[in-house]
Amino acid sequence: MNRAALILPLLLTAPLAVACDEETQVAEAPPAGLSADLRARVAFEPVAAAAEMTLVNLPAEVVLPSDAVRELAPPLPGRLAAWSVKLGDTIEEGAALATVDSPELTDLASAEQELASIVRARRRVVSEQRKQMAAGLTTAQQVQIIELSLREAKARLAAVQQQLAVRRSLGAGEGAGDEAGGDTGGPSASWTWRAPSAGAIEAIDCPAGGMVSPEDPCVTVMETGRAELLVRIPERYLGDLGAAPKVAFTPASRSARRLLLTLSRRAPSLDAPSRTRAHYFVAGAADAQARAALVPGASGRAELMSEPPRGVRAVRAEAVTRFEGEDVVFVAAGDAPSEAAPVKVDVVGRHGEHLLVRGALPDGARVAVRGVFLLKSLRALGEE
Image (tube, rainbow, N blue to C red; front, side, top):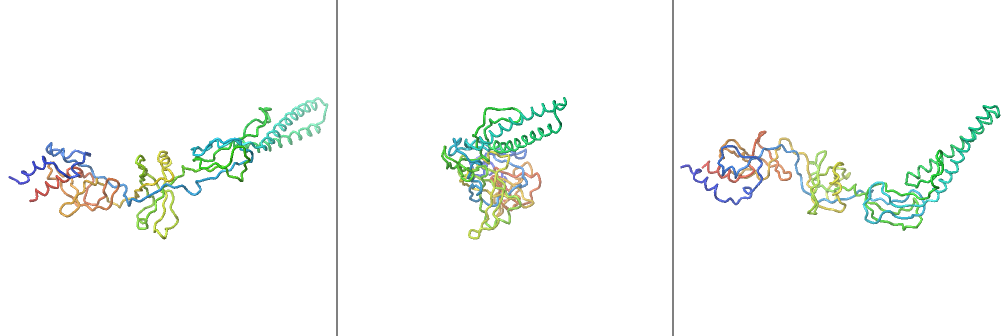
C-alpha cells in the first residue's frame, strides 16, 4: 500500500499544533473532489495585485502648524461687556467670542439717523419746488440749488452707512435709522466679536468690563482642525517614497481607530543630526472623523506606505511557508490535495496582514491560506 495513503488518515485526525492550521477565516472553498474532512482543513484565496507596500513602521505624533495658535484682538476698540466663551470651549468659525461696547458706533449711528432725516426733508422740498416751478412760481435755478443740496446730503449719508456696514459686518448691533425707513429703535454701541476660525479656547487674557483695542490680544484660539501627523522619515527610505506617500496611523489610545492620511507637506531639508526628514500628513477633506481624531499631542505608530514594484502580488502572510529551503505558496492545480503545487516566491515587502511576493503566479491563481502545513506534509510524503 502507498505510504501516503497510510499516513493521510493520521494527518486528517490528529490535532495539528501549527498556527496556520488554526486560522478560522475561509476565503474560498478548496477544489471540488476533496474529502469532506480535508475540505474543512484547507482553504484557498485568489491572488491579488499589490496596490500598496509598507516601507517601515515609525513613531509619529500629532502637531499643529506654528500659525495654528492665534492670539486674537478685537477689530474695534471699546469696553468688553461680557465674554461668550470660557477656557477649553470648542468653537466654530463665526461663533460669538464676546460682546463689546464701542462708543464710536453710537456716534456713527447717530450721524446716520440725522443725515437720513435731512435727506428725507430735502426730498420733500425738491418735490414741492418742482411743483411750484411747473406752476411758474419759482425758477429752474432755484430747483437746481435744492437738488444739489439733496445730492450732498445723500453722499454724506452713504459715507456714514459704508463705515457702519464695515463695523456691522463684525457683528455690530443694529438700531440706527436708514435713508428710507426712519428710526429703528435708536443707535447701539454694542457689537458681537466673532471667531475668524474654528478651534479651541486656550487662554482668555482680558477681564470683562475692561477696555480693549485692536493692539491688545485678549484670547488665544488653537485651530485644532489644522492638526497634522508628524513623521520623521530616515534618509534610507526617502528614495522609495514615491510622489504621493501615505500613512496608516494607529494612535496609542486603544479606543482610537486606524487613520489613513495623505502627505500635506515636508520639511525643506534633511535634519543633519538625526539624518531624517520631517513629513506632515493630514486627513482627507471629506473624512471629518479622521480630522477630529487627530488630537494635538497624541502619539502612536505610522505605517509608511508607497507604490509597490511592478509585478508584485499580495498574499496573506500565512500562505507563505518554507519548503525544501525556499519560500513557497501552494497553488490549487486540480481536485486532489496532492495536486496543490508549491510555487517559489520571493518576499519583497508587506502591507498590513499581507506579504508582497514575486513569482510565477498567474492571474486567477488561488493559493492556500489554511491547511498549508497539511499540504506541505502531503507533498513531502508523495515525493518519498
